[in-house]
Length: 297
Image 1 (cartoon, rainbow, N blue to C red):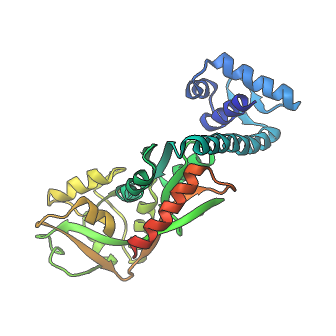
Image 2: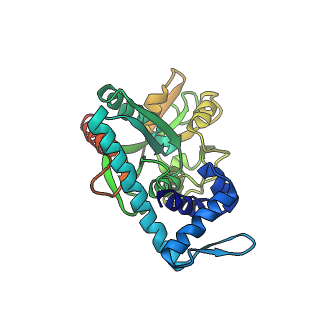
Image 3: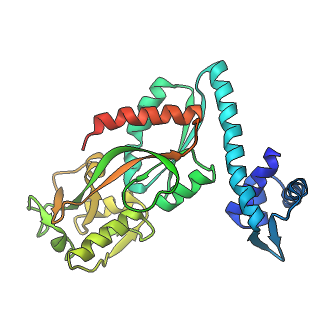
């Protein structure tokens, strides 16, 4: 039944029989047969079928909710038995928002020193994608904002607070300032993250509150792209202070504190709210708590 439940989860996620089959590593007839067998076992119709996938029935949505719990519990059981016999091992899949990607190494590096048999997959995702992938068991944990938009039912560990800086060339009109206001930043040609990113929505809100209109001259979903453009001396951007420090400033670039207001948001680790946690997630949460004590504000 576990395989059949995984088929249902894949179909709910992909919303297409062919893509769900491909994601599950089986043929479409195999996936369809598995879901039909699950329907027969449950005695109810789970999927609204037509010429294409039309969604889950009300019963299908309830089975999907149970499927996530059951599949998660099965994975946790396997991890725990393996950990008892061989120590902690396996692969941790972590999704992180672009502004926090550079900080993930501070979490994974000491973790691997403690647990050398654990492997990692780090994915760049929006905050919305991160939460969805945790719910769908596509990733084990996420690093995202904790205090700006609804998180849903997750366990959180605050890691650090995000302060904002104007990243600009030293020879620009604001480049010699010790601090700038959001109203002043609103007048600068900016390159920013794309609107699907929560960081961008935060910055847009701050600029509007200061009486400005967000009109970036360049958008990207990559912080590296933004940083590269700022380094040309012809662009400016708004970035978290810790990210600017990690990427590295040159003599010709400055990271200037932005005030009025001195906006702050909390970044943290999120995992599925379940008890008990999987051994990998429990160890990751413990590592996150240790990291939080060292990062400070």
